[in-house]
Image 1 (cartoon, rainbow, N blue to C red):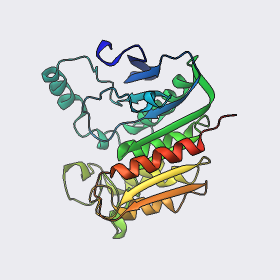
Image 2 (image 1 turned 90 degrees about the horizontal axis):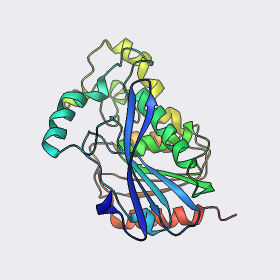
Image 3 (image 1 turned 90 degrees about the vertical axis):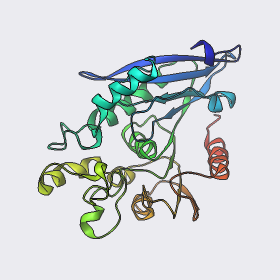
Length: 274
């Protein structure tokens, strides 16, 4: 990617085969200093928008992979891309919910774990440090990836979605997509409740959080009406690994720069140099 490459950082668009008919695209940016580096995986938030390269982590001496999860070719012109994603990705969070083996997120979760394997195959990985971080759906996928792939050493989710997926059935605010709430279209469940309940626990972030074994930094706000604070507390309470929280009561579904800075300092403090 010439526009995102210079004499200090190289950026490439990569495509990973993550399922029988499933691919994910990602922007891989790496320092060009001939040294070994930690790797950072950043899964995306909800939706199917285009992703873009960033030099935030490479400037700090880290190899960075920002991925999308739908197999959408990032090189398409915007108009064509938007038409395609509208046809291909509409309502993806509800697709295949009839079974844990057909649910849309099955390949997504496996694909994120596969992305870590790809990063750890790079010759300039330092052989020790693997970071996963992201917000909302990306926060959920960070926790899930850290629980699924033992190569991960640091987990830093912000306001994770897909948490307490059945909360609204028990008179509490579940997290995005807010299934069973009836609040908006993404929250709709198109199959009988009993059938959905056979599938969703396999994909609930709460049930991955208790399997975390690596240092975890998590940040969320009390004014978030997308990923409710109650759903995020349900995740936090299940984490038995070393953990640090950053609660910003006035923030909604976003983070203050100070939270990002605090998280980055925490990452640096937890990177192994031995």
